[in-house]
Image (cartoon, rainbow, N blue to C red; front, side, top):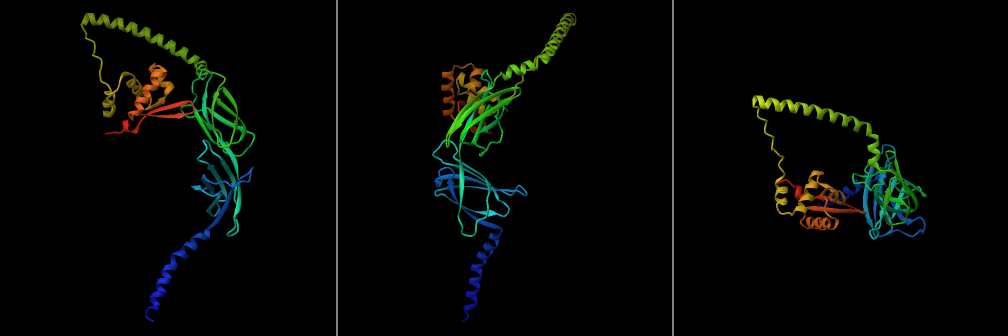
Length: 338
């Protein structure tokens, strides 16, 4: 009989965590969804998902990712987070596959609800002017037959490239604008596919900028002529004073900025073409594109490809391909401080 109080105490200790978890779960509702294709009504499985839950009152967000082997998605819905975004991607396709945006009504306990997902594809590409110059910060707007998916306006990055991951399937018109130029591309988005696009603006961005800056160029030219004439006159007077007073000119400074130790060691092992590529990257914040490197170093296209492959094999550069664009940057090992 003396063991009865001890057994009761152990039972209370074991049941205490369960009681606490039950109380904590009161502020959340359990959601159990069966994901289906809105067109075929077939269950969606073997898919990677990203879920974002939004509280519309204070804009607070909660998100998680998961890989579903079955079509069932179960999670706790925090109180007030009734707006949901679900993005789905089959790892066997190049592009994205499904998208959902809407409000969830809380099902009854142990009840399972169907969620119809919308099919999407993906589009990547570049924006260039009519001289094939890449254009950064170009505005892109998507006008599609269907109005679901992620259709918010986007901009091109510093390499002139863009990426629209969750684009509705069907016909889409992509409108690119920059300053007073425009380019339009009509495409057909298919589910799970990754479409590579080039949008060409109707004018040269360089020539447009040059025309608008013409008055400034004229002013600078006049100032240059004036400075040149003043310098020429001052130089004649200085040479005359030098002959009379035997004044010796000051010696020009030969100080240069030292390069990082690792860069110096690496350069000693490279040939001339490899060095030219590295110098170009160093002058452009450690990254550039293959087209720019070719333009500035004047290395032939075939030779440049071999040079870049050689540098990549030596772990000196990384090469990332985005459509037809190849980004080149120094590796973290090269830039690491000793």
